[in-house]
Length: 349
Length: 248
Image 1 (cartoon, rainbow over the protein chains, first blue to last red):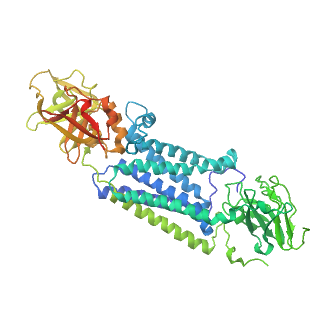
Image 2 (cartoon, rainbow over the protein chains, first blue to last red):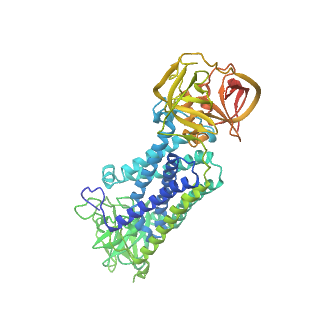
Image 3 (cartoon, each protein chain N blue to C red):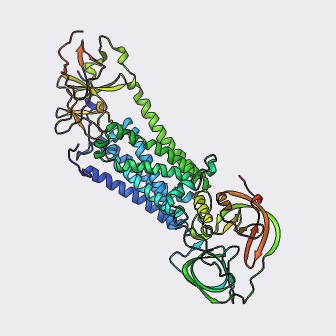
């Protein structure tokens, strides 16, 4: 969390993260270009650069898309997610080099503007073999640019969390466009089945991880609001919630995190205002709930970030009856103080 | 009573300097896996891609050549002497040379250009304003077109400039848009005959040049029925649009 603008809030882990990205990218591009030249002396450097950057960006996008579900399956991988935007920006930069080189190579120095050439040269949309695949790549590049340009938290505040999140969810549209871009472009020109197998494997990994993560979370997403009695829902035993941690349940379509701390219980929305991170998987540290994704903090009783920060979560009324935790499924406005329920004092039914 | 803390004891945020051991092990294993892919993937991809064509484009180098200029159907330069040769002529970028050599048909010229060559087929990308007339029209007579036979060929419509060496690949679906723009820019069209290294410049049945008429067919497999014509060392396939069909 930062209250003032800083381009990058550097720390030790972030430096190591970026150094790893730089090293991996350099190794990939170097091996592709140098190895490609060595294997085929007739190869031209501009074509190798186009292919190295294009495949590198596509591979990196697979990594970016896999991190989310991997962290859902094993939260020990969360450090990979913390700086994921750096991977995303690197993906865009590689894609931009690929796009600019391809634009110059295939469309510049002709009779029309190169960008116009991409849009008007091929219009055979009915034939897979003749489909103007470069337009798909251009559309994906525009999306990746929008995401990279707004990746800083400055834009998260400026656009608001829902708009920002919606914009960044378009990465899946960009991925679909790129799968089509590769399938209708490079794969039409190449003869080796290896490339098709690699593409299919990549799609299978990304899809499979998302399906597995969704299947794992599905039981927790069963809406319990219908179980309400007297306006409250029984979400489980007090003893089932570890100290300093939360139990997450779905009430009226929203995930609610019920935290136990210092003999008390408070319930807040489990959706972080930063990037929709799972607050319910966070921990009480220094009296504040800490989101496991990027460390955003909220007070459990009123859902407010400590000053000078301004983020607020909806809160929920909680009470304890006969050792059971009861939550009112109707959310209070964000930042509303709710008296924490004591785990020792029994509320009337 | 609360659940055993082991399930929850590790908690780590990315800005903290020290990472719990369980996180370190898992992150290291994941990074090692990704870096292994970063090493193996390019090797697999470059080994699987099609081999590059043998064409040459002497980018950044120019040479001066003297010969007799042929303006029609497509600009060319015939060099006589002890080592006779013929060069197709094209302009810079995605442009032919028709504008650059207008009115010079049959004249002896000295020009400067960048060599493009593939399988013995020569081309020069002309340096503008570096075409100098060194003699009047006349002298050696140009070779007359000779009709050899009718034939049907299957191949791909390519722009000769990219196909002969400026681009790799200079054919196929990835290069299609570039070929369309080159043909629209009056770069001579050629049929690259499937399964061979044969290339035939495509002209109309009456010998006039093709340009934008069928640019949209570039990069597609075609069947062309026409007449094989030779003019000196240059070979043409003379056909009408009706003789060209897209095949799959």
